[in-house]
Image (cartoon, rainbow, N blue to C red; front, side):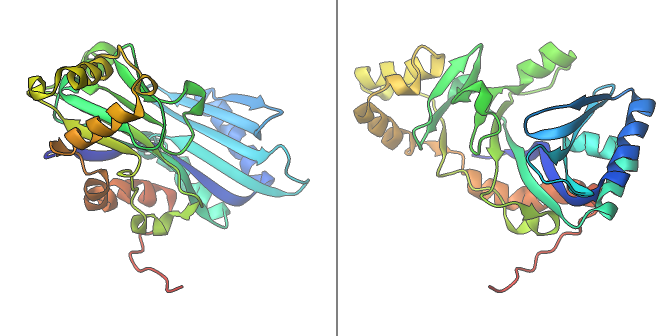
Length: 282
C-alpha cells in the first residue's frame, strides 16, 4: 500500500525520581501563567495538572497514590507532539530533574490516501471490531490506553467538520496504541519501532462483486457497520482473511520501521533524549 504516512498522535512519558521541590513550583507556575487546572485524586496518580493554551494541551501527573512517602516520585507527561514543541520552554527542563525519561505509550497513526469505504479492517487477535458513527473501534472506549486499541476513521471528513479544513484527495487514519511490555528509554526508542501486523489486517478492497454471495454479504456487513466482527463466524472470518490477503494490504511493520526515526526525532529533541541507534549487547 503506497503513500502511507506515519505519525504520533499523542505520547506518554515518565520522568523518574523527580523531586517534589521541583514539581510543586512547576505546577504553581503553570496554574498562574496558563490558568492550568490542578486536581488531587485518590486513584492512579495523586496530583494532576491540565494545561491548555489554545489548541495545545498537556497533562502532568505526579506521585502514584500507592507510592510510599518520599521526596521524589514519577512525573508523567501526556500530550501530542505539536504541544511538546509549543510548551518546550518548560517541558524541556523536566528531564534535567529526572533520572530517566521513559516512553510509556503512544498513539501511532497511519494516514492512508484511500477512502474508508474502500478499506476492510480485521482484528487478528480476537478483539471485536465495530463501527460507530462512521468510526471503527476495537474493544470498548474505557480500554483506550490498552496496548493495541485502535480507531479507524475518515480523517478528511474529521478535518472538515472540526477545523473547517479542506484537503485534496482521500485520507483515512488508522490509529493504534503502541504500549510495549516494558517502558523504553527515549534515547533507545528508535530501536523499537511498533509491530502491528500480528494485531490487524487492513486491505484495499475493490470489485467485491467477485466474491461468493454469502461471503460478500459478510464483508459488506462489516464494512458498513451492520455487522460487528464478533457476529461473523470463525469459518467466515478465516475465508475473509484468506481473501483479503490476496489484495493490497498495509504492512504496518515495514511502513512504521521505515519512518520511525523521523517520527520520534522531535519528541526526543524536546524531551532531552538523544537518539541512539546502537543496540547494547545482551
